[in-house]
Amino acid sequence: MQLNRPSTSLWGWVAHRLVANYWFLAICAVIAAPLAFAASVALDRHYLSGWLIAHDLAPVATSDTAKEVASVIAGIDAAFITLYFSISLIVLTIAAGNLGVRLIDRWLGRKLVRVSIAGLSFSLIFAVLTLAAIDADAPLAQTPLATFSITLLLLAVNVAMLAVALHDLGRTMFVDKAIDALAGDAIAGVGAIAGRAPFSGSFAQTVAAPRGGYVEGVDLDLLVDGLAGHDGAVRICVAPGQHVLEGEPLARFERALTSPEAVKKALPIGPFRSDRQGAVFQIRLIVEVAARALSPAVNDFYTALAAADALAEIMLRHRDSWVDPGQVAVSADHPRFELPGQDFRGLFGDPLAAFRQAAADYPAVSIRMIDNYGRVMRGVDQTSGSARLVSYLEDAARALRDHAEGRAQTERDRTDIRTAFAQAVEAGG
Picture (cartoon, rainbow, N blue to C red):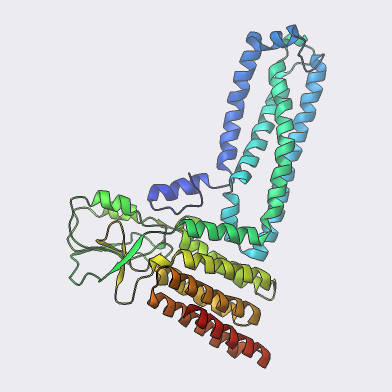
């Protein structure tokens, strides 16, 4: 499954929580190692050990040597897994302190991290079992030579994999890489949104949230299947990433349902924000990284500049989700489903306001973001041509200009901020 894609169903959320973690593959490896060992030993006893000796391919001359080497390999594997755990904790602690604790979930879900710890776990268990199976006083023909050879091969693979894994852990603290990955995932999560006049009639039924938490996604396909014989307008009252309290409305229906359980399954609620909520989480996480970078404890405004550039790219790619005032967002594929809060303003309104608040004390960052607004306005004007979206972006740039100008310490900074805004408006016009 794609771990960086939004989860739109209850089962998708459960599968993500089960698979995208540090221990799932490791447990699978620990279970698989004895099974692989048993199969290898069985083959050794039938013909592999004798075949290796007959063809002069035995990796050792005596059983005692095999025992000693297996003991050394088991010790090396134990040292490797200890080293990897130790460095992982150090790197994640430093990175979380500098960049944000919510990135940890993404890092622990990385395929290379999970494969590395699973491989080390498998090798350790396999090596220990091999050590236990070798009798130092037995004839060489009774020694599981093929199993011992596999242990040697796994050690060679682990040495190479450990170098790759440690390099990857070191790159974990390279914040620009994390920002680029977040931007890529946010862009990949673009949905087909259209706008139309909202339903003006009365709703016959409201489905309430069974518990409090954060909406993990909206599974429209499940809703469409579950409401195949149900006509009338449907309004999804919540958006991915939105916090709901128990009893608050999840969806409203023009015509009453016989059973609301399918609706609740299509709108899974999790206990906290997570990467499975898609672009809404990833955009906010980029802003969080920027805000933390601009804090006095970190004071890294170049990271904030990278975040501003990423936000500009994401906004441009989500330009088609703009819905004019007075209209409501609907699914382009299923127009009867109203999706308030899932349009451009719902996605970017709060994050852009938070970015403005964090960047206002830093003229260089404010100027960069104002310039990015102008670039996005120019891109929007050349493609969709939505005058309302251009006006919205201009208002956001103006709010940032006013806030930053009021916080600027020198007249030179204020002049630069005003000039950046004038150029941005000219570019967008």
